[in-house]
Structures are given as C-alpha cells and as structure tokens.
Amino acid sequence: MSDVRYRISEMPGKKREAWVRGKRLRPAATGGRRAASQWLSGTVAVEWMITLYHGVSLQNHLIICDDLKTMECPSRKIVYQGPAKNVTRNRESLNSQINFRPDQLPHDPDRGYKPLLERNMRAIRYYGQKDIRLDEIPEPTCGDDDVKIAPAYVGICGTDLHEYLGGATFCPESPHPVTNEVIPVVLGHEFSGVIDEVGKNVDGLKKGQRVVVQPTVACGHCGACTSSVENACSNGGFIGLSGGGGGLSDRLVVPKRRVIPIPDDIPLDVAATVEPLSVGWHAIKVSPFKEGDSAIVMGGGPVGLAVIQGLKALGAGTIIVSEIAKQRQNFAKEFGADYVFDPRHQDIIKETMKLCGGNGADLAFDCAGVPASLESACKCVRPRGTVVNVAIWERAVPFNPNWVTLRERYYLGTIGYVKSDFEQVIDAIHKGKLTPAHMITRKVKLEDTVEGGMKTLISDKDNQVKVLVEVNPQP
Image (cartoon, rainbow, N blue to C red; front, side):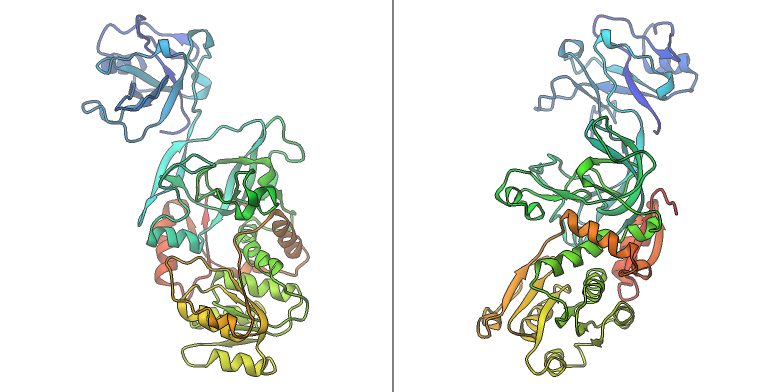
C-alpha cells in the first residue's frame, strides 16, 4: 500500500470515527471493518490494529495486525505513538486503523495521536542466506541533520553476494551496536542519487543535487574512531548492509557528513562506481606505495579492476595481474595492466620475478580472496615488500607465516575507505584519470535485483564486472 499515512480511528471509551479530507464521517455502529468499508466506499484501504504484547513491552506502540484471526503481526510496522493511556491493553479489543493519503489527513495533536509513517516505498531487504526479498516498507523521515536521497543507480557488490551465498557477515543477526537494527535490512551500499530533502540544520547541500554516499557506519567513540580511523570502527559497518537504510530502496536518509556532491559531467551510473573505486584507492593509499613502484594484483573482479585503475592513475610502474577468466583478463588490460597471466597455466611467481629484476614486486594486492592467491601474493613480493589484503574472506584458510617471515615481507589488511578517498576518486574521474564507465556490464530493474542481478553475477561472473540496479534512473 503506497503513499499513505495513518491515523487511529478508535480509542477506549470513545466512538469509532473516520476522517476524510478534513471532515469527520458518521460513527460506525458496530463491526468496524464492514462499517468502515461502507463509509469509505473503497476509496481508502482499511486494516486492523492491535497492541502487541507476546512477552515484550512495546509501551505505547500499535502494530499492523496481518492476521486478524491469529493476531500475528510479522510485519511489525509501528504506526502510532502517543500517550499510553490512549492504548487499549485488552488484546481482545481491536482498534481499527484507516489509511489516508497525506492530503486527506487532518492533524489532531490534542487527542494524543501522531502519525509516524507518511508513505510506503519499495526496498530490497536481506533476510538471511539465499533469502532476499522485494518488500514494501515505510519511507523514512528526514531529520534535522540528515539528507533524504532518491537513489538512481546501485551497484551489486561482491560483499552482497557473500551475504547472499554464505550467510550474514555484515548484516546484523542481533541488534547492531550503532544502527540498532537487525535483519531484515535494506541492501545497497554503492550508489549514486539525487537529494530529495535536506534537514533544517544542513548547509551546503540542496534538493535536486546529484550526490554519492560514503556508507560508513561508525560509533564515534571507540579507539579507532577517536584515532581518525573510523573505517576500522570496532562497532562499525555499512549503510546498506548493517542497517540505516540502503540504496536498494526508493528513498533513504543518511547523515549529512556522509553525502558527497558530484560534478555535473559525471553521469549518475558512472557515479555509482565511486564506492568500489574508493575501496581500491584506499588500499593503495594505506600501503607504502610510491610513484613508479611495481605491483601485482591478484584477481580481476570489480575490486581488482579498481586497484588496477588506481595504480595507473597514481603513477605505478609495472602492473601485473593474475586472473583466470578470459573476459576479466581483457578488462584488466583495458584498465591499465601491463601483463596479465592465468595462474592455471603460467607460474605467476616465476613470471613476476622475471619482470621485476628477479627480486619480486614492490607490492601485491590480494583481491581474489582464495587460498592460492594468498600464497602467491606473499611469494611474489620482494624482501620487505608489502602484501595488501583487500578481499573479504568467508572462512578461515591455511596460512604459513614463513611466507612473509623468511624474507621480512609485510602483510597489511585494509577495509573500506575514508571520505578523502571518495573525494579523490571523484576528482580523478572528473579529470579523466579514472574512466570506469566500461566497468558497467549490465543494468537491471529493482524488481529484478536477485534474478537478473545477483544470480547473473554468480552464474556468469567471468563476463560480468559491475551490475547496476536502476532504482530512480537519471542521466
């Protein structure tokens, strides 16, 4: 049910009544559902409300009852908040609830009710392993320090696929320490969009502005956050994975500090690649990379290609790539790799040594996240060279510390990005140093996110790089 807001139309000790376009209609005699249907002649929908106890105190909240006979409420939509004395505590006594369009609802604060939800919207939500659904949920309200965004294009990330195939890692199965949300949560953390509304305390941003969002979720008070490393927050996560809304919905509300404008010459579909490019950019920035360094990149998927493009833009010397899929090998060459090898048929360690003066590459970036790539990355770098792990691993894998110890190599982990990474990536696209448009290999509609998007990336991953979901597509 879309474009509705709610009003309780019955309170204990008062007659049931309904309002349409600011006018009170005659009270219903008995029955409620039938009488309400007769009053409104089908012009608005009628549902039932009950208070929900089930051993949990919800105080003064009312919930939509999905099943009148069993009084089960799996949707748990909170639609009313007001003084507890106005809420019946008798589960046998049902409150009828009537949905109105916003322009039909009179405001009546004196009676203690307050509509919380103004309209519903579409959203792709994660429920668990191989369980992602297109739902209709309430549209969020924009706070004073927030920005409401209409997502345009949303990239499907490898992390989304890990959650779908392997089960929850970032999606919270218990209340998240920052967002306080638990699955189901809205997905979509790499996206572009247009500002739909700004809070009254927001400066420098305006409705209609084209933006991207840095989806970092951080607590602000842990050791990492107070050391300016909020991307490594011990309580952290990501918008679009850990709660706080997500790009795979008609609207979402984010803190103003997470919103970054984009120049007019960057199309919104290309802007949706800023987030994955920032992952690669950040991995390079936190490493000891310097201009002219040689590097090997393990894996030519979206993040690997982001690292390749970042290395090229930042002035790397020799760039070597290890990738088994033919189409991704071609993409790696297109985006700046000097040499591409298939580790199934070529000795990647021997080839790297040969190309790097017999000593090994200065850096290795492991974007593949498989046991073979971990060992090869460690053995491909020079003494006191650095292996940077960019991949997210689904499970523990064998690791021999002697791979790094015996040649005094360094092993470094990296996660996400910081705001400066986003800003530098946007500037590099604007100046033509990064040209990620060809990373986009497919676009699908929101309702086709799983079948046409995720399952295509799983079954045809060798030919796909970045699949975008069109939510509110614009140039």
